[in-house]
Amino acid sequence: MVKKSVFVSFDFDNDRALKEFILGQAKKEDSPFQITDYSLKEAAPEKDWESKANAAIGRSEIVLVMVGPKTYKAHGVLKEVAMARKAGVKIVQIIGYKNGEYTAVPDAGRLYAWNWDNLKKLLS
Picture (tube, rainbow, N blue to C red):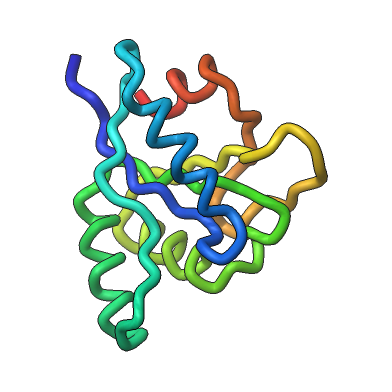
């Protein structure tokens, strides 16, 4: 099975654990997707970060936005969504936690519950 390449966008300051969780699910034998890259945050000039993120998103087939309580206003996530829109890359938003209230990231489409059936359908 050919796996879809997925870029994971998440609120680096508040939801790093979500990246680890989705990386684990990508390793499942029946996973239709592979994580090829994810949100970057480093001590580099803003312009350099943007060019690296833009290149990584351009190499991906899907941008998966992992949504936590503050993701809808996370500067980096908003930029990554805009990059994906500009590149014509499909965007999927998954609610990262079971409990709480979540706001969709603007211009990133509908929010979906995080369960294996949804991941397999949305990321294949």
